[in-house]
Structures are given as structure tokens and as C-alpha cells.
Image 1 (tube, rainbow, N blue to C red):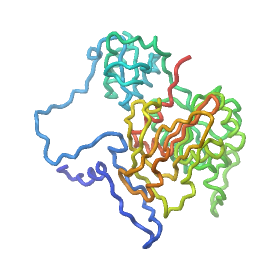
Image 2 (image 1 turned 135 degrees about the vertical axis):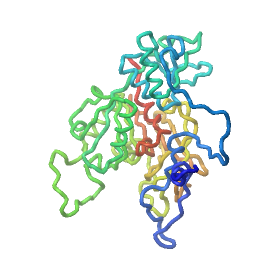
Image 3 (image 1 turned 90 degrees about the horizontal axis):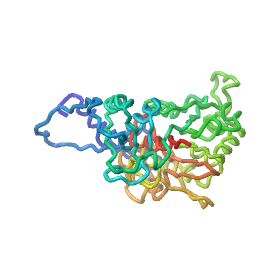
Image 4 (image 1 turned 180 degrees about the vertical axis):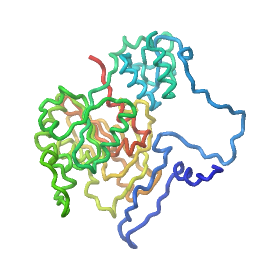
Length: 404
């Protein structure tokens, strides 16, 4: 840190303790210019250690080059899901026609759910290059392990649809496209007409994603209920007006009933609860700013390691919160999985939180079965501004399926 950028490095790497500012003495919290917590190690799911003295020792530059001769021997190679780059490697490998499996049984020294790739003679050169480019280590499947093709069907990318409204302010959707592009996930963009007019979405999709946006944006194409365009705002052409409307909601319900998976990020959880009548409530929806205010901060969340959504994740992770969403789950005839939840103390890791205690013991990530399908509600933005690498896996793990 003995350099001109020292203050900037500290700002990015250290945790923020934002002051408790008020509009006036005893008044509501003062809205900050942007966000109040941005600590990069927390967002990226890595541990950073500050050294108070220089690190002395016999050091040498790391050799990241990897040729085909450097690959481990064996027909099957393993990429652990704890490496976020493993998903990019797998997706690029799948595009070449490679075979990939998810480790279904316990193998000593290898975490469950790890990707197992068939490294036949034709693909060893491309695998070595992918490992080098993405800096993802590949290790051999231990001798004596059951052959992956005997344990499960191979993985393949799901047919993913991403809902894109015509309202330009829904920037969260653009950030998700950036992340999916960077990790080579295939997807298609769907607009209002696609959802309104396609009665059988299951013919085209396996997974549909709604990024953070309010219910009125999705249903009616409005910023909020009762929104009146300001004087002088250009008239919007008819084909760009409205939302998915009642027809789109009906088609979405049919998609779920027939086995589809729908992901709802942040404020889109309100739409899922209200329009699809899911067994949950967002008790923070109408809470006043005086009582609850988290304007872009990083908090602790506990995870259920038995869920397939959490493969490659630790049991506790940092999530980025900048919306009034927390889930209370209701009784339901089918089993709801509370995959992520806030515990009952000291949630704030970086930033500012007014009324943090309202989140204690509340669900933050829930998997709700609907017919043969599943709705997944994220009470946060797992891809916030393309920075939260630490929670990308909670999206990525939902985007694979087994070949039939």
C-alpha cells in the first residue's frame, strides 16, 4: 500500500461503517447518494487479510501456463464448483459437445456436486487451454471411483429465458445479461408479447428469470401504481406499452404447473407472491423508512448445504441488500425449502442498516414447488451490478439440467 492509490485500495478492500445520518434531528434516515457498502472481498466471496508488516520470504512468480502434457492423466477430470470459473469452463466445454456430469456420490477429497468432465483424447488439448485461460484447476477422479455415466445422466444447459421489459429503468436485467454472457450461459430474451402470446412456454423454455422490478412494471409496464408521465415526456408507441398482463400471468402459471422453473430476484418477489399467489409474504413491502432502511449494504446469510442451489457455496455467505424484501413463508401442502435465511444477530457486514432486527430469522432465499415446477424467490439481487461473484452460483446452479 506504499503507493499513491493507497486510499482507494483501502476503500475497496475494507468494510464500510456508514454514519447514521438523518434528514433532521429525530427524522428519517437520509438517503445516500448511491450505496453504503461495497467491500469487494465480501462481494466476491473471498477472504482478504491486511498485513501490518511486509511479507518476507522466498517468493517466485506463479507459473499459470498449462499445456496438454500438464493435464492429469485419466479419462475423467474434476472441476470443483467452489471455483466460479468452473461454470464458464463447463459451458464452453459443453458447446464443443463434451460430456459433463455432476458428482452424485461421496468421493474422498472431492466435494459433492463437482463437475466431472470426460477428457477423451480429442478434447484434452481444448481442456488444457480452458483450464489455463480460466485458471480453473482440473484434478483426476480418484482410481476406483464409479464411472460417472453409471451414476447419473450427463448435464446440459437449460433453455433459459430472461424477461426484459420495455421500461429502461430496469437496469438489473442488463447486469444479469452481462453476467450470463461472461460465463457463457446460453439464454434468450423474452418481451411482453412473448409471455402474453405463448400459451405453452414449456415448448421453448426450462427456466425463466425475472430480475428485480416492481409488480406494476411486470404487469402493466408502469414504474409504479398510479404513475403519471411528466409533462413533455414523449408518447410511447403502442407496441412498447403495457406489461405481460393477465394473459402473461396465466401462461406463467401454466409453465410452472408443467414443470418449469422461475427465478424472481429482489422486488420481483412481490410480483411472484401477489400475481402467482405463492405461499409467502413480504412483510417489509410497506414498512416506513424510519423503521427499516438498508440502502445498498452487505449482510450475512445462512445457507442450506443440502440444496442443489448451494453446490460450491459455504454455509454462510455475504449478500448484497438494497430493497425492502424479506420472506415469511406460509403453510403449504408441498414442502417449501428455506434455502437461505438470516439468523438472529449481527447481520451487517459492511454499510448501513436501520432496523436490521426486522430481518432476524426471516427467509432470504426460498424454493417453492408449484405443480411439477418450482418458483425460486431471492430476497436480494444475487448478480448486483455484476460484482457479487460470491452469490453467482445461487443463479448458475439453477441453470443446468440432466439429459433425458
